[in-house]
Image 1: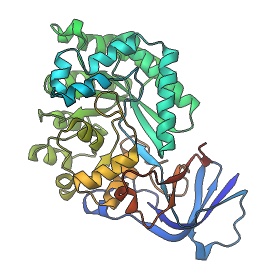
Image 2: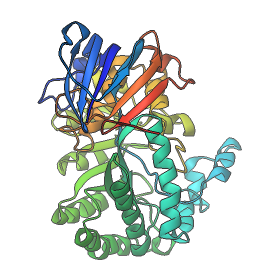
Image 3: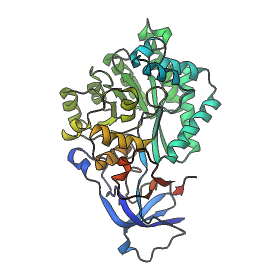
Image 4: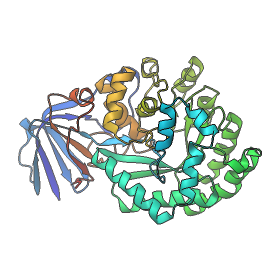
Length: 412
């Protein structure tokens, strides 16, 4: 099956083989082809170029993209979309003046979601989560990472990971699974936190390894959550099962989470709303991808990740949604890209790079996703007729997507 997309107003993120991420000043460069075509065979990109060079190409299907822009589908490297119910009551609490930490202290937050999830059947959890997954696909996401972390018991964490695995088997979108049992301490372990660390290390991790349920390991390394030493213990134990770190750091305080992440060769360190010179210098010595979550900052009213500081220091940056019931009940990566431009002073080129090629890197998907490259998956966004790609972040409240292709097939 061959599909030809022709008369593309502008084809974005055109990259040669071997470029897995972009850093620093290179993030301002977004390679494009005006008046372009793109040829798909089965599920992969096999050719592209200027319409002036389109000669003798046979195809089974033709899509006319006159006036429209084509770009790689978004690569969302940080989500929690497998959860039960919602936390709209806490949303109202915040409006009435309670902080994220105060809500958590009175039994809300992550523990609230854990109670709901533990009481939800695996089948019902799958149904809820599949609706969210379908929503973000329609919004242009073509690869996604999904974390556990709302179970906080052996049975519930495994239930979450099995749901993620089932989603990956039933949907053509690339899905990466992350074990985040170290998301919060359950109430029964508040006075004996080391016992919960032991449960993760000696009971949950071996079961995950046995069933091959997660590629990544995550820890919420933050004041009042998991210390640097506890994070070190968990990440060290996860190595036995080949799990790669992707960790929450510096959402509220800088306590050494970046350093412990880099020590363990973390693929990414995520949040980074609070960052200092020591953190930046550590990242400069690593291959770790910083990941910003601007929708979380928007929803909670906390500082935004200082994108300019990171990029101007020569670092790469990825953007992700953090889709979850408590701090970011949205997986709309179009809004993420707009917010990064509006609130984090990123250029459209930087934001698109961060949400495509760098997002793919943060999921170990650089070889298959994130750019218009021959041999990569044909996961694409075709916009409506728009003036330029700068209009995408500019018109932040409009749905500018005409169609989405996953593995070369249009999403219904």
